[in-house]
Length: 394
Image 1 (tube, rainbow, N blue to C red):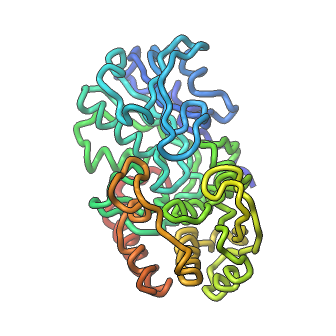
Image 2: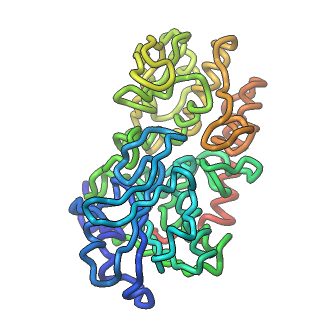
């Protein structure tokens, strides 16, 4: 059942634009999913607005049009032919806006669709924009959007600052259950209290809503996030990036299909069934990635089928897959070596998990349920002491 009354920040900015920022010069951080309810893109709407003057565009990882692939595939800025505006890359020579990029701007507006996982880099681009704006005495306005996998379930370890990186710069659970506006609210209050900061909240969104229960369309926020199904499994399946397993890049179902040339599908699925993971069924299969890990090679593995998304635990499921493959194929399974997302020394799995404890527990044969106990304890403490203070919706 759709909730047809939902409006995102982009639908409401004309009516709710902060009065003190009227006639400001604006820089706009966008990507392909920066659209309103009617699928009009933010750039087109901002060009027409009488509230301010649009002076520059900024793009995160994958570009303003989503044209580049996964981590450390950089892109260069350019002049946009349609608008005549400069487009600055925040995933190239710099990930933080430079003073020269902000010289003609009073306010940075951020309109980015997040997917509800701490590793997804857009929220950290937002934080780097906040840093640049406080240093340059600029304002920030966030146009809020739904967390597509809901704002009611948190899961996974809370990042330890010793493992901070571009896939997690601040303490946050992996499945954080916050909107981008709420994360901005948290970051501003905890780390940038003097920043002139504004959120244009949504209308009629509720925490327990999945994106397909709203009237909003799914627009790919990045090339390997094709559907809401991808976003639902991503909080756990992105962990596979820290291993020699294919996470399904180079297939039509990235993060839902996984495997490696050394895996026998039936044996793996049998091992996973023993773990009695809630809300999920694994279907044994073979596949051949067209690019990325094991490109052109026949891989054995499985596809995740989420049978009940309200019971499904994506992070626990991702850890279960790592544990099962590690235990079944100890001579073949391997952790990926650095570099990964600009981290040259720490293990990719450790910066993804935000701790080295997960890797060490898998290596020493800790049970899945014992592992879940410690990360959920961290989650609950974060929810109680920090997260609940910054939520904007019921």
